[in-house]
Length: 111
Length: 113
Image (cartoon, rainbow over all chains, first blue to last red; front, side, top):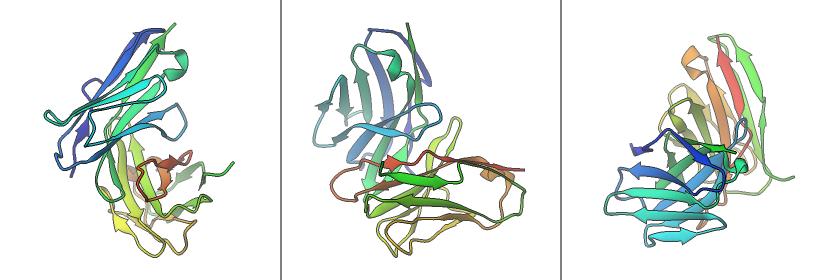
């Protein structure tokens, strides 16, 4: 099966700084990628997605970068806030409606 | 508020017992999913359904079964629970069109003793 993994299990940043969360994937056939945020005790929530025909997509305070050459994507959060503290998952899709998730990165925002 | 409803939110179960986790959505989404979440392993797909009347196996289907009799409901059954099925279970849905956004329930925490 697919292998979606993260380089760092935990990331600590200072409030106001930018955060970068990385994700590696192994299936070169994957054509759609999503980032999710999961707060403690809750289900994951969609943040942003990107298709394989793009290398960058921006949302509100978030940017996703996709590098298909090295099978890597990242989530950048600008001006990180305490409310951004959560576990972040990347997910990939290469088969209609089947999504595979990485193990997650915990983001700690220090005041 | 519309969305995904899971029940129960938490359950302790003796090994060997049968258990059904319920999931209902009111968004008329075609696709529904069951994931389990274990520390360090992220979310793993158990079963999915692209549309009412169809189901498919995910990454870790053994020991679980699902049914999709209608659009709204997607129950997950453990026929004979084992301790390794202790986990947090999340149900999710998506419109199944040109978006990958999954809408998740709040999870069901299951402990098998």
